[in-house]
Image 1 (cartoon, rainbow, N blue to C red):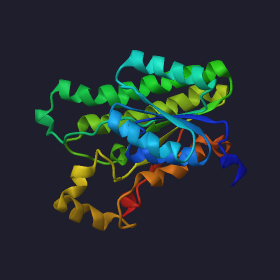
Image 2 (cartoon, rainbow, N blue to C red):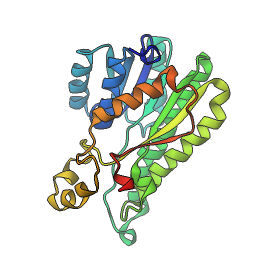
Image 3 (cartoon, helix red, strand yellow):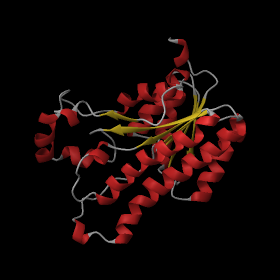
Image 4 (cartoon, one colour):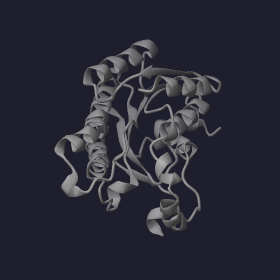
Length: 254
């Protein structure tokens, strides 16, 4: 193993880590010997993911709703108290849009998505940064944005706005926290298999329109994000901050 990618002793938190992209990140981190805590609100998925992860290494799961500020604050403090450190935080939890036309989109509907995708990401990264600063060991903050932040996604106003906000947020964090040796980056997934996209991908009309624009001729999978998670958590990325890293199988260039 390339030595910087050996995460022995490293503690990582992955929100939304019980399926899809988050679980793929958690797999990669555990395989690199990190101790990983995953968060999710679905107890059944948490249990299934934890069973898999503990078969590969050291992991635990917690039921945490990232839209609940007090719950996030308490849960991150619990992780730090249990392990004595927090080295990386992947704010991956989020919800998808419902493709409602603009003139039919109410503010309550808009906020139902941004409350999780923006507020939840902000509070998660803020609290992770708070402990990283206090511990003085540096660290890595990562927000999961989306390819849709760079493309016109009609009907997905709250979702695209929230994912664009995550990119801006991580850039601001990168500047402010650099003096604490804390770096911050965003990951922009393209079309990737998960519980959130299952119904969309099952639509034959959608698949026949989109797949021909995928140079790699397949959807992304959670495991496609294990490598980038390990890289961003590891010392190999110590000079890499303030970036928005696109992983879309070439969709955006074809």
